[in-house]
Length: 227
Image (cartoon, rainbow, N blue to C red; front, side, top):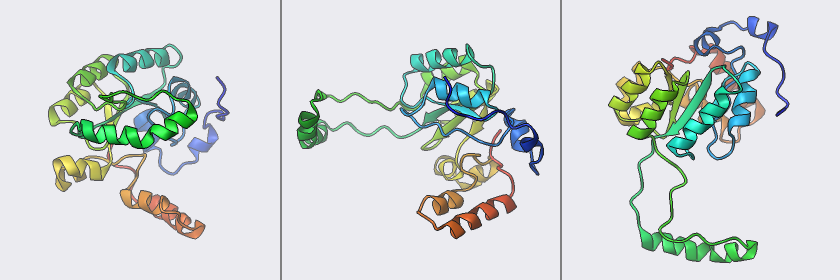
């Protein structure tokens, strides 16, 4: 599948002032594919990895068996480093009355589109990182595992690290679970660099403001939260 991704970094990578991120992940250009759940899959991860960038396989919308199947498909096509991304959100308390109210509100739109209405109880379409998921990671041993909406319990995190996987998370997510001091002792996400930079870039900044953020990122220490 040709996704229009250009060839590997070559001389461009050699011109970078700091290549520690490249060395850490075994990639050729510091470009990380965002692991967007239910939006990209095996083809995208393989294409990005084969182009010398950091390919990511989003797993939050997949059961543990589908994570295994997806990683097997990836490994049949590339041996380049891959990031598996998981969610660590808190499961909401089930409320059938609330779910029924949502379905009632959405019913006209389902009818207009000729779509089949879901039936109660609604089944989850996003999965959280569990003990069984951790067991799958231990089997698959991806080069990197990243987490969103927090971090797993410390014992699960220790198992992922023992499997030889590098771990990526966001500082503020680490702080929620382990406190700011523990978060500071971890290293920061190459996806995020710093939450302040993300906030500045995602609030419809003007080009001068965005350029200022990029200059600030270049002056800052390199991403420090991957180990």
